[in-house]
Amino acid sequence: MNYDLSEIGIEKNIQYECITTTINKEGVKNAGAFAFTYLGEDKVFCRIFDGSKTLKNILDTNEYVVNITQNSLVFTYSTLNCLSDEYYTDDTDIAIIKNTPAYIIVDVENIDKKETPKDFPIKGSDIYYITGKIRKVMKNDENAMPFNRGLSALIECLVNFSRHKMVDEEKRKEYMKILIENQRIINKVSDEKTKKAIADLREEYEKTRHPH
Image (cartoon, rainbow, N blue to C red):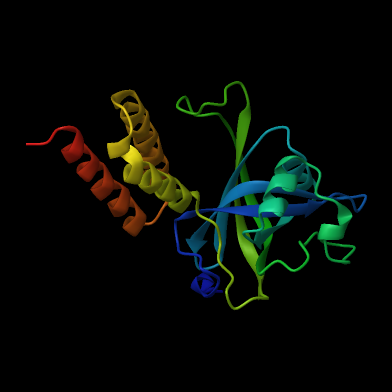
């Protein structure tokens, strides 16, 4: 079955930051902030490092839920592993964030355990590549939109650029280092428009650093 995830702001082959919710065999719910990629048709993909409750629950149940939200508290508490029961719906057989703008229920089809790539900052931990099939898509809010951290990275660079002529050379060098790192992130996770935006910004920044 083909799904049109553009209705909830998701494009194919772009990485989005979402809240992955799972439930264990005892009915205990868990939430974690993980990246999610739509591969097209009814296929989705995520990567999870060894050791998380999310991974253990997925291995046990072969399902998870992708919650599309930009709620800062939900992201924070999910990362700190302290999202309380009040944030979940009353469902007893599945974990879904209450009032989430949209969510996707995924059935796991394939899990590949691999060593962490050499260019990853995390060392000594296995990583699991998880491919799944969409079971259900639910849109609760017409304005549902996933979060792509590339846009935040771009905005931060734009703020720095607006100030770079008013700061000293040391600070300008710091801004440039931040821009280079954020461009790396954007080129990895964002759409072509955002990639072009950061490239144009860097070009303009280089002009101001080395005027003709």
